[in-house]
Image (cartoon, rainbow, N blue to C red; front, side):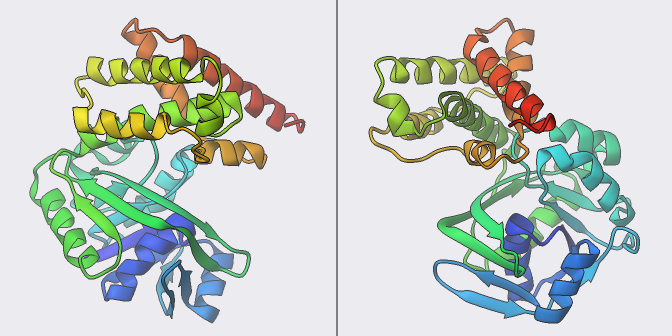
Length: 311
């Protein structure tokens, strides 16, 4: 099978690169500058355990042809429209898109563009960046990937099996899920709480929990997001909730959401796709939206100030 990876930055470069390193037929859809770096130096990946450099195939949005079986979509949610346009030329009647975005609202946009039969589910966990010299740097010890069919048609099942075959030859932690939408809802329950609270309080989990009301507010927030997922038909499994609470209530924990790190750096944030999405759903189902509303208002205010050049 032929695999197209949108972008060769931190996420696409790492997860697509590991496939190429294992011998899969992988092509990266990239802009001119990145194509030049890759032609000159190859794709270079540095992680805590290794450094790898190898030649890769590239293509542009203007020249891509519809002969790919799988497209790994590794963009930020706020770049979804331009990313859909970029990969459109790669799609034929059985091409499957595997989105690795945060959140879940992008599924509707991808279904509208390409049809539900061609849109799988997926998510990833990695702390990686693209350095100025073109090196993909994985800065942590977690590089995890999750995907699965949303419909049991032949193309999606074959794509899932193909990814399992190739990732089985890499050091990536991966899961081929048989209940991917459930998995994605569970992730946004956690991520909306984690991002919403650490951004709202401008602090890490340990700093929030150390306050008089921090633990209670954290619980109230996650209760709202759990209620939303339940109302949507995807109640989080007890084992997952226990895992969420262990992270969200960890005394002295230094962890923060990547959204807070983006906010503090003055970068664009995925507020609408994570916190705003859950706020809209809470209101639809008449669920307590107080903390979701305050958190999203805070994030919108940041975006307005950033747009005005004030941050």
